[in-house]
Length: 334
Image (cartoon, rainbow, N blue to C red; front, top):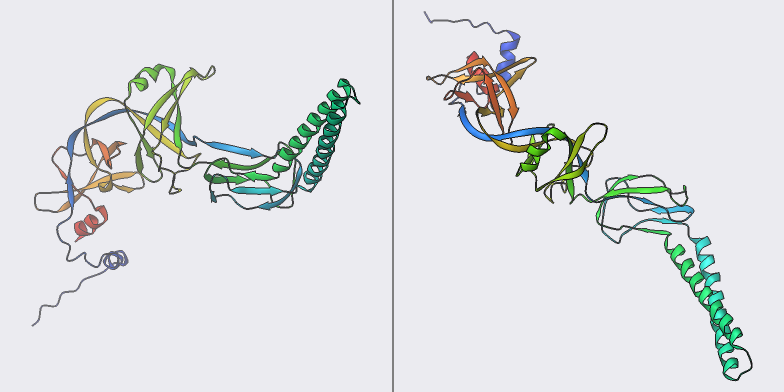
C-alpha cells in the first residue's frame, strides 16, 4: 500500500508559499558577521537644508503681468526672461523723455553757435547746457524704468514659487518669484554654546537624511561668530557637495541630521538591512552553525553612514545575521 500523507494548509501557510515560491528550495542565506569596529564618535544635531544663493524677485515698477514663462519647479539659466510686465506706460514715458532730450540737444547747439558770435550771454549758454543735462538724465531714467518690465534671471537655478499669475497687477516691491540655485546647498544647525568647542574641532561632518536613509559627507564646516540671545545656541553651516541638489531629491527646507565627528570610539555593529521590525519588536535572524536562521530580539542604537547600526543588546561579536530577514523567516518556518 502506498504511503499517503495528508498535509493541512492554513490560509497563512498557503499565503507564505505564494509569496515565496522558492521557500522549499532555498539555498544558503546571505549573511554578515556582527563585529566591533572603530567608528566616529559623533555629536548629532537636527538641521535644515537651505540654498546658499536664493532670492525673492520683486517688481520694480507697476504693471499688469503679461507673461510668466516659468512655473514652480522649472529650471532656468542666468539671463533668461522669467516674466514680463505691461510696459506701455513706461514706453510712452521713455518716448517723451527722448523727445525732450532731442530738443535740448538742438537748443544747446544753437546757443553755442550764438554764443560764438557773441549774440547771447554766458548765462544763456550755461542754462542751455544745464537743460540738456537734465533732459539726458530724464531720458536715461525713463530707459531704466522701461527695462524693469522684463524680469531677468540673475543666476541659473530653479523656481521655488511663483507668487503672481498672468493678468494680475504687479506693484513696485511686490514679490513675483522665489528662486534658488540647486548647485549650492548647505545645512544649518543650531547647537548649544557649550558644545561649540567640540564642533569647532570637528574635522568633518556627515549629513543623514532620515526619510531615505541616505548619507552625504559635508564639504566645509562654518560656525557663525554670534549666538542667539534667547536660546544661547550657535548656528553652524555645513556645505554640501555641489551636485547634491541636481537630482531634485534634496531641496531647501528639508529636515536632516548633521553628525559632527568629535572623536573615535569602538562599537558593536550590524547591517541595517538585517534588522526586522514588527510593530514594537526589533529583531534579527541569527544563523547557527548548521546554517539555520533563528529569530532573536535585539536592541539597536544610532545609525552610521555606511549602512550599519549599533547593537546595544541581543547579539555578540562573531555571530552571523541574515541580510534578508524575509527570506530567512520563510526558511525558519520550513
